[in-house]
Amino acid sequence: MSMDMTTDATAVGDTGLLDTLQHEVALFARRAEQTRLGGVGQVRNSMDRAAYLLLNRLDKEGPMGVKALAASMGIDSSTVTRQVAPLVDTGLVKRTSHPEDGRAVVLQLSPRGLSRLEEVRASRRQLMAELTHDWEPEEREAFCALLTRFNSALSTRMSVQGGPGQEGQPAS
Image (tube, rainbow, N blue to C red; front, side, top):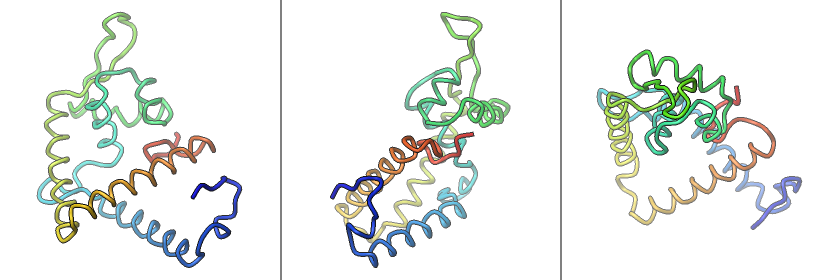
């Protein structure tokens, strides 16, 4: 069911269902922020959301400049600069000179950063396994597909409206 952004949501579906959906999303957001869905064990809650998303992006896309990283995450360059500083200070990210333009800075995941990211990923995978231990594989796949679709719709809406970035972080 496609819905124009100006369409009243209650006109396209059951208001009770939409009320339940918005309430459950609000609860999820609060619980996710409270726990940071950080994982289990010693690694639990040991990396904030911004750091995780930045490290993850550098791991998936490779070394890049601040502007490119900001653009790929849908956030402002000044936000990336501010969020990367403690990651550089703790040795999780390296700043290097651009190979073709020595004046430009390239951000790169350090070996220590990759190791730390893998620890956090493993801890978070363990948490997801525990939370969904009694789900059928098809239920996990359906939830993942629907959550991905929901996040994509949110990202599209926010980019059209100029709101928070694609990664759910404030634009500045």
